[in-house]
Image (cartoon, rainbow, N blue to C red; front, side, top):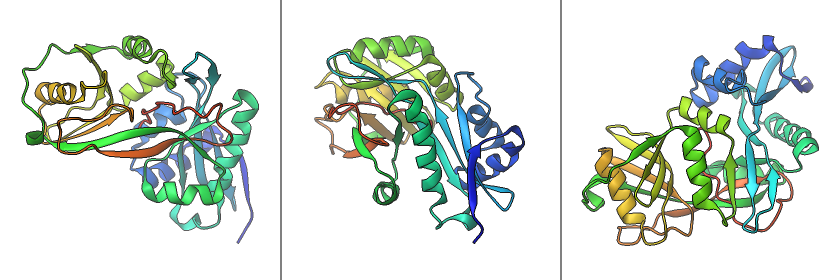
Length: 282
């Protein structure tokens, strides 16, 4: 097997990167370009692995996350995203080598590098090859519409990404969490995220007739069921999936959901805290 080299991505690599991301994630060229070409202009960059003159793997680094400890310390923490390798080039450790190269490069600038791993298979595989530590968890719970209580829908207000970011920071002050720069939230909006505020709740949702994933639901303890029901009343769908901080339990609902270790540090995390960081541009 020929050796491969890891290098910074160049403009002429874009078609190959698009094809890798189409095969790995189903991204259209337009979707891939949102981060490959840094549509928000906040410093995204990519590395590629090349073998026999052909780009076979790619990864992108997104700045724009700042970790806040519960006591107020702040840490710049860029986010590794969209690691993809051509199917015929897998099994050689190329993707893991690319991930480590990006992490090493980013740590030289920021000190900490993070990623999100939602698929159970990947959560089992990655730690075998890449030193990573859990630094954040989510509670994920799915419900059919008829499982949620019927409540009169409150007046929900759609917020701009920037306004949502400000409201979110006010809610999470004093809790360990990742703050998202406005460019990151605008990028999420380009992928379909919409931002909402209601009485006692904040939410990032993608309303649809069949499914309504709620990427982030924030409310005070004891308010989960009413917040979930309010979103369901405002955005009718057949199925809902809610992601909340682990401390927010879906009391009075059929199930409590699953706690997932999803937010990881590629290297030692800044503290032993459980950072809330749900948005991953899925």
